[in-house]
Image (cartoon, rainbow, N blue to C red; front, top):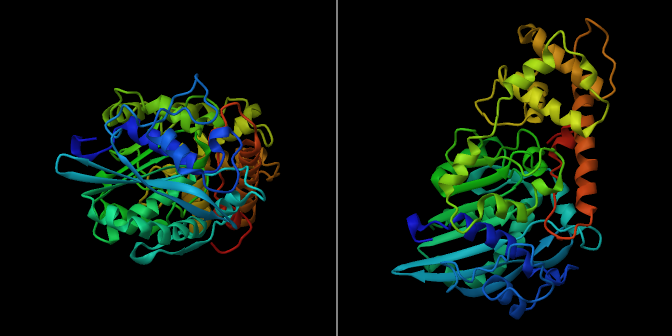
Amino acid sequence: MPVKDELTPMEASYIATNAYFTLKDWIQGTPVAGVETRANVHNRVLGPGTAGKVDPAQANPSLAGTALGGARLGQIFSGSTGFATSGFGYVLQLKQGDRRHAVIATRGTRPEMAGKHDLLTDARGAMTGFGDYGLVHKGFKRTFESIVPQLAASERVIMDADVVHCVGHSLGGAVATLVAAHYRGRGKNVKLYTFGSPRVGAFGAYTAMHREIGQPNILRVAHDLDPISLIGPFPYIHVNPAPGDDNNMTIPSPTGQLFSTANHDMNRYIRSVGGINATWDAARGLAGRVDHDNAVLARWLLHEDNDPGWVQYASAKTLSLLFKLFAHVLRTVSTSVIVGLSALDLLVELLLTGLYKAAALGAQVYSMLRHAASWAGITVAAGAEFTAQILRRIVGAMLSRLQQIAMLSLTAVTHELLPLPLLVAGGWQLAQGLPL
């Protein structure tokens, strides 16, 4: 951590993982609403990591043995997701030389809560104001607001720190983003580290966060096929969204499948970037291996001699191909200044801007849209125009399939009991023709 006042990838990934230990009985593999005991949280965050059930095949995310091993565990705070309150994170304090550091860790979604309370937060896709930053996801802001009064108990530790590190995975990454923006607004020097985070703010919010927090202080890590970083379409936008952004560390996924829970699993993020000798520069090198344009695949999918049999109705595998196809073709006609959006974002932008009406889009775009319509089970007569209603039906079919798979992933039982995907539902409103 002493280098540039930054956590190392291992420290940040461990913190993002062990934030879950604040949830009662997480360490037993049967988490429920409530807050874990301080002794158990200390054991798993800074101690030997022996409390509860331990799988020797998995990485032990205790900070013991790292540069943070001498940190002091401060407050363990709870947060409200939906209608339940449960352990949501903790605060660490550490002094290295003459520099004082505070760490605020926030956990991600858990589906085991009775009534699926965490999922209710994830499904609130409406937008609301967030101070001078602009519009953000309403559900994430509500969870953020539930922890702010509790963080007041750590006021001295946080406000006296030279650097405040905000860390989280999944839902925790979204909340950590708002925590970082909040303390930056109070004059603190903040660093933000997220893993597999959904998008938090609308068009203007991400630029405001870049300006206030500083892009070099925002380190975003995502597997390129992590569904949580893909869904929740435009106008929600990631911080550091462009492939060329130095701290957009969108790295190759551990599987080649778009809807694999492993792509969102925090333990896989540890394996991807969290080794003892790992560096952020190495993660940036991994990001350089991701094909954001998919040009070769797109040319093959759209070639006039190609059998369009690859379009299978409602297939998850072919939906991933559509994502890649859209990303290549629509990026060439996007009117947005934003780059690095997903295929679904760009389709939504076509719908919002009315660009689908432009004759200049060309045969390639219309060929792509016909493939998408076929995938969605929509018959479009030869020569017929694409209407807003047809595009809404395509978007609705995509989002419906995404939702089904994400919810199945959330309720799936894995031997690791690690964090699984959440769903941002703003695009559902758009598909229904409702205001965002």
